[in-house]
Length: 356
Image (tube, rainbow, N blue to C red; front, side):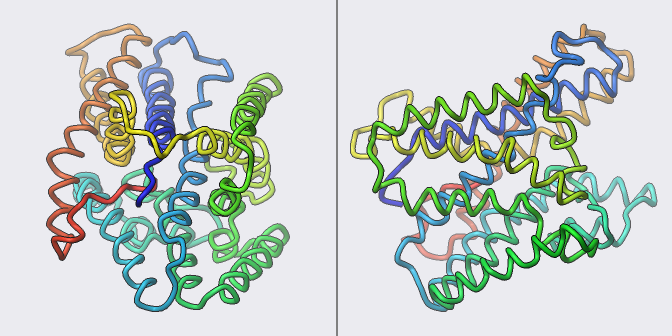
């Protein structure tokens, strides 16, 4: 895109890191039974909100980068670019777990559907893909499909899809059906919040940016004080009412945060060293997000073997830094070459900026 939002790139990296920290704490406390400084506190699972920030950013980036593009050709190009950006590296990194599940006899059709078809709800409760964080990619793909249809059909089709989603959301609050649990999931609202930000941010005063960030931080802080139980895990996806709580408690502050950061951006200024670092780590955030699960599995086995013994907080720190390093390596030596290979023309060889 013509504009480069370095603050948003930094947010993407921060969101990925927050998820890594939450899972590293889970490794140390739940799996290894070690004490950590954050164990039992509201901060222990707080990093899960990184997903909500991701979803808002995704809606904003997609709406911004496709501004003014309509018709079947534009929609087809958009969907292909999104598919090659998200699916190949995800399937590649899922392979080690899929092979292990197949050998152990635990690879079910539901897991295969969630992994390869991006379909989460074969029943009334969510089935995790082989690579756990892949559940968020299922919602990403759902959003891309809807957005692509809106691009192909124009404004009327777009608003029709929003209306259809609203109807499924309302129906899903009273009827427990797999398709409603997925297509009508409340968390999809966070993508739409990002789309809304893309449509209004240019028309608002720059001075609203700091206020929005302040309100976002206050909202997140309030959730730490009063609690956010039940919205940080699969319960918010299996129970749509709980999902609505997540959108209110974490989704709205995430939207305020993204809006505030976007509004404070100076996209016309030449990037400095900090901005370039944010851009790089933002680009690497997708690989970090996917790869950290494999790092945690490997470190978990290492610590369980007794070969290495460390205090809980040291395990968390090591896990976070190892995950970041592994994600950057995968970004440089696997993800980027794969994108180049799948980019058909020299004109498109500038690496795409991932949305989530």
